[in-house]
Length: 357
Image (cartoon, rainbow, N blue to C red; front, side):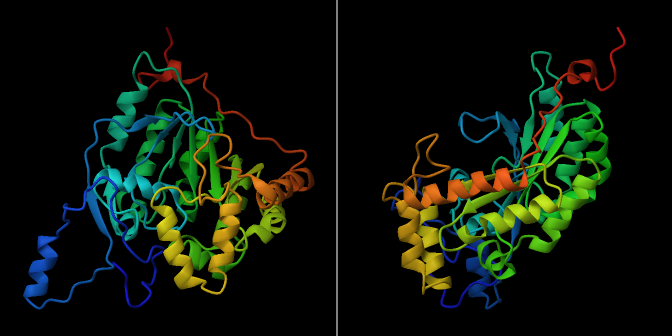
């Protein structure tokens, strides 16, 4: 489905086919069809929040190159609408498209705090950092209403369990009280994703995210409050933000970030089609150049699925990006390091209070 006019406030401009459905499978929305017949105006761009009830919430991460062993996601789909987001593909498992559906149909797991508590209270569980937002952002707009992330942080604090957070939303500052309490025992670290210093670039790449100014302020506030904060420069996209590697690293270093990481963009699954459609409509003058340079980073394809290669890329362009990141760390983060989270306290608090005997 192609829209005649650009869809404001969205990254994807189309819905792709769901790879799990065959050609005879038809998606229908009887309610919208009824409204059309009755002559009612339909807001096709409205976000829907849909409750789901999974049996578990903590996922073991088998990928060896993502920097986490366990993750949990309170929401599936993400209203931020980042056009490059690898999580788009996971929406197909729920019967939706990786395109506009990913941004418009947000699945909400309101039982997440209960499921988390059940999981970390198990006698067989040995504390290991659990990362919030391994797939979709735990502080996306839905969190303002449902506050599931805040409830989960309270569970981590109650049981003295280590937790990592990845977000690009300043809403994380709402929970400073809990984050500071966790930080006293070295139980939390926060990673802020910053892709560009240009608001124009942010608006087209990540249409419903926090502004760059607010994200840099978030890094500074977290750092000033003693909460370890890492910055993820991801993804680096040739000829879109690749020229910003050093200025970005300098800015986040000045804001107090303790470390910095990056990835080179890869457009796996349906994301290749979604990104190609987007860039041809949004940046038509450089679309071919960008797509060719991305392919240059992945052996002639828009993505590489090989562990150890997919995040960094190969070839001359990828090497230039990775060399710039090495220089950035030497120049702006030489005397800083990321400290491991504390896993030693949880066994004493598995029943919610300190075990004296």
